[in-house]
Image 1 (cartoon, helix red, strand yellow):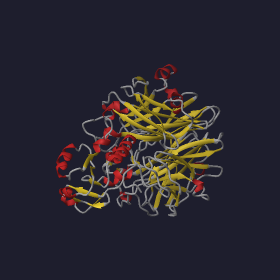
Image 2: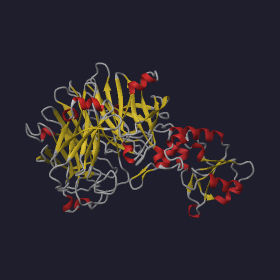
Image 3: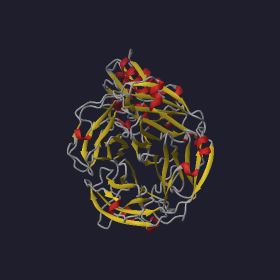
Image 4: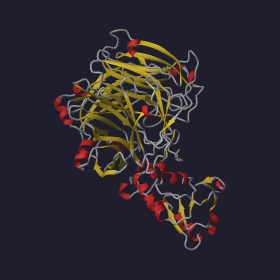
Length: 630
């Protein structure tokens, strides 16, 4: 496992990790270590020497380590017990590295202590070029590292299109630019370029076919590194990623990301059903190889991981057929990925009947334990934690829901499914039991709902139910899979539970995208369609306890520069939902004015909506994933 600190639920992301893992920083680290003579000592007051060595492609290892804080003396730093900085006068090292940024003052104090001929360096040598820094005066300001990876492919009749918006403009950002680097399957950089972004909250589109043509590239299936320069408000890079077939192909799918932090484990990966192949895209997020044995798959709950015996080069992408390691595993079993913090948000691809669909695994939390307070939440919080999921119109679509363990300490899931019509009225409910960690429960809603129920759609909510006992930690997840009854085309998405739309709060729930709880407003991004594909969204008004009888929802159509073109209003019943097609709410002229980079901002100041979005075509193809707040 990489000895790095990435994300902490209390403190958020570790910006120092991003500063060391950035591709340009990794290249600079390799040059730095190549010129420093050995033996090499490290001044490690910040405790980052281990991460520095883990992420550097040419780190030679440290012979000695030094600190300023007397309380840290003797603690492990860079593989050695920390010695007092005053002992540098007796160092036997030929080079000393101060493992810190903005370290000129400390370097000036340390230099007189060094024996004659000892070289001195700091991490300021690996600092990003100033033109790529949003806040040049503070090297470790988190806004300097608004970065993420995206699966990116243009090969074998499939292309990818990344779509997002300049939502930083809403926080006052101006002059936003993207620094982009595309890697092929071997981890070789294919292209590096910058892209200007309009100052308004306009759309951003990066299409693999356009990139391939622009740089005259061969077919590729790798990853795109995205660095936003000029971000404001926060450093999270959110996007939707469509995979679409070129020519006469039938594939269409959608996934997203807002998580740029490697994890020890990921979960929510389905085992292959009959006639399917499940391909896990193992994409190295760092400039150091993944060693043999560091990647392993396990049936969820089995605790018998099977390791991959191959190394994966820096920034390389390996399509791993899960049957290679787990040949006998079948749906509805689930797969746990153990990857030792080498990967950022892995994708899996399901191949079936000449179609492919892409979805993402979720972070499996290792920092959670059952919370004894959750089974006894006060009545003001109603049903407490709930996970809303769409039920597309049953006349055309079949829906299957599978609870997915998503924390290493989750030994069981005491859960129930509640189903609602679009008008917010209960349609059905089923207690699923106290499911074990290794359960194989996947609920076909056709088995719960009578014929004709939710023919025009509705939604489901997975909730805790402690009638048979059990424990909970609030990190409740599920996979929702929809299938077109005529064509067999499938799409799926997964997400986790929250407390929704209660005025009373419990810890950080109901969550807010900006500010303290309760989160009682909505800002959701919905891309537009095109090329024969219609954009849609299922907007769900979930309520843990009774809230406003109806929402006051605005659909604001924006053009590619971020200017508002038109607005439409919706009223969604509490505990209800609506299926939205933008081209049914806006005229053809308004849609043309929005253009190919336009989008819809779903805005509501009265409640927090939860949404799923996708594309539909006339041949029965469709995609589905949950929406991102902006």
